[in-house]
Image (cartoon, rainbow, N blue to C red):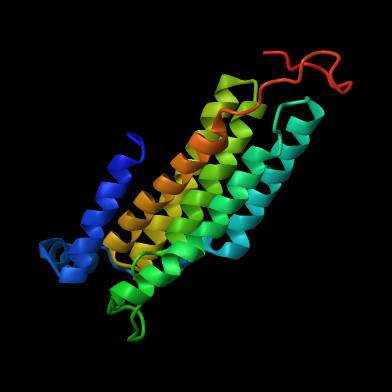
Amino acid sequence: MLLLGPPLLLFALITWQVVVDGPLVDLDERLSEDLVRPDRASELLSDLGNIEVAVPVLAVALAAAGWHGHRRGRDRWWLPPLAGAVAMALVPVLVAPLKEWTDRPGTPAVPPAVGYYPSGHTATAVVAYGAATLLLLPLLRSPAVRRGLVVLCGVLVLGASYGLVRRGYHWPLDVAASWCLGAVLLTGWWLLAGRTGSPVPEGGGGSRPVRR
């Protein structure tokens, strides 16, 4: 619960400010005016949060983690990939009602509409790339490759976030709130399934024990 507390509190604070049109919203709008510069690069970066781009990456990681865990005889090998899939499925389940409830209008760079808070594309990027990274890290032996994977995850999430704000698809607070929401889902994944993977005892079911 200690791990879930900070992102939940920050998400609640941002949501409260959006709903009551508080001082953070004024700051958010001024910051957006300085950052929005629609161009082709920002459009491409924002696409990193598209379901068609991010979810297949997660699907590959789910398959790799499941295959590896089963082959190595890990206990409950199916739980981490299943939990990762559930975390991804929870993104639209949580984001859609929040968009309807907060009813936040978009930036001047997009056609007049409401329902921009929080950013579904950002939440998709955080959960898809984050869960893929957490699933693949235990499969990698090289510390350099592991660090590279973490850096790549950060680049993809930040790239999508920057593109969404720069293009004007979302206010900065929309993106920040989705970072918090994604952190909650990834933390939940870790608490539920991230520490599984103990080997089946030698001789049990013919599976080989895991070498650590």
